[in-house]
Length: 348
Image (cartoon, rainbow, N blue to C red; front, side, top):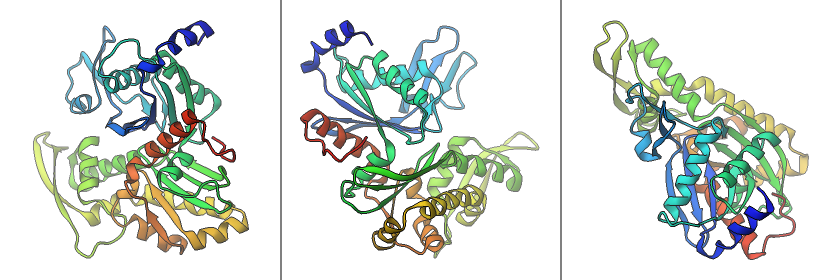
């Protein structure tokens, strides 16, 4: 963005509400400075194929997935936590800015965007460029593990190791945070979406029923479990018979969901244990004492903390409001950045 454009947008900063964004593969959350989280909607945009015009964003757009005619396309512009469609991501950020400001004109907020720690410089630059094109007067990024640790209330600037496991829709990230920086980090593009896809394939193979991603997600949320439950849960799954093509309803249990998602869960466990093995010895001692903190939508899967505890033999805790931790932490960073109170040891 040119200096003249930056100067012009700065003239209207008093009209603008500064925003921190958690641009997730499945959901986008917006934190407004001084107000907290004000928006949480699916990261979905529907566009008209021929004109490219945006028709709906967020909740309204998600309702259209799998139900659109040939002239309309429902797009998830972020894949594996990074931008897959630049123009649609720009449209989504513009929508958020307008919604936060109730469609006021001449608003150019300061934007801080949480992104995966493993992003390349090109991917990081794409996020910043999309923010500027959407109307930001200034844009910055924050590594999601740092935001998650802040949002979970962990003492990130203290000389102790804090382990954060963030299981989102597109990416699982594991980081050891200490003294305001990330000491050890690994990421894997296996997370909630891969669990949904594994469930789609399982139901097709074992039940001869074709279901969509939305239905698979509903089943995972409804009866999904990573560990055996005291009482298994049951849920009806509606789909299309793969032989006759007619609508059909089957019953699926939490034990069947556990079997279906076993492979992606095993990959996530391998990632966590591998990251802990790479941590320095002194920080590893902190992990035994302080435990592992889980955030992201994947942390809500029943019994996943028990499964991780069995694999690592260290305490496992699920953060309060795990789906909001990255947004809350990115919002805290925004507050400190604007007020000038950012801890000097903190390295974004």
